[in-house]
Image (cartoon, rainbow, N blue to C red):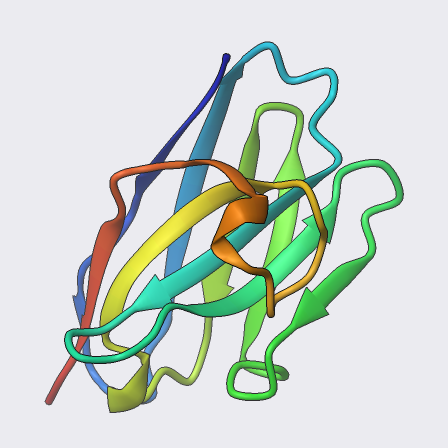
Length: 122
């Protein structure tokens, strides 16, 4: 069983930066894709970024492209958030994906964590 755990969420001012971390543990040899998604109250889940663990290719949603960067280490995946704005406020989750992308139906999310809260406010 693969386990993921997010950390790094915090309050940040608009235009600021924040880096989220996701620790990946367990039997990870079959993990081909890791992703970040977020959900704000009253809104649908939104995939923001994903990364292929083998080749390192990345995918971003239009709303974060150019501002966020997903990267990986041996046992972790990160989301660097730059130039954040109020609409970025949400619970951010890390997930193991069966299909690599940002617009991924829930059934393809194999494992996800408890989330870490990002609050963008002045």
